[in-house]
Figure 1 (cartoon, helix red, strand yellow):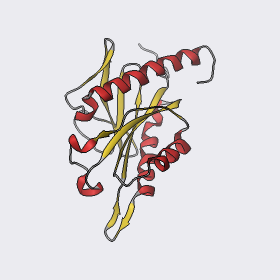
Figure 2 (cartoon, rainbow, N blue to C red):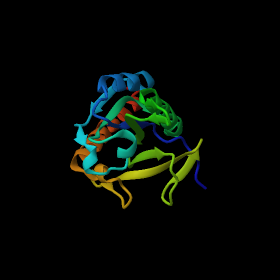
Figure 3 (cartoon, rainbow, N blue to C red):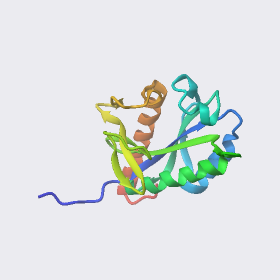
Length: 186
């Protein structure tokens, strides 16, 4: 019989998809208020080249990038973090006669030793229910010396930019874990 034990903490990341008129400094400030300092950012890319999924709601010309946070999280926190980023999206949304028009989409997730996990409000065959209406999926797996996509991995998470970014986050994450084991603050 196995003995349950607490897994290592994980490295929080966020994917930020935004409309051209958004002031990224404001979004980043709000994210650091919630989750602490960022320790890495990817390059910004044209998200609209991968999908038009958010165009009706957010408009055309959407861009996206990834950020990583210095402080590690307990993995079970990811559902509450997803709810917090949903609330933050509403703070940046534009009120319309029929509701809200989002200008920013913030998708949190975490990097651990073996995977990148993303929470979502949408259930599907490969997603596991966590709590509070939040599901989670393994989006990338770490195999050999790099992250690798799965059949359901979003197209932009398959790119060289994304894989390189998450490999770097994982490399820094492993250093953070070693520092924690030595009793040092991250």
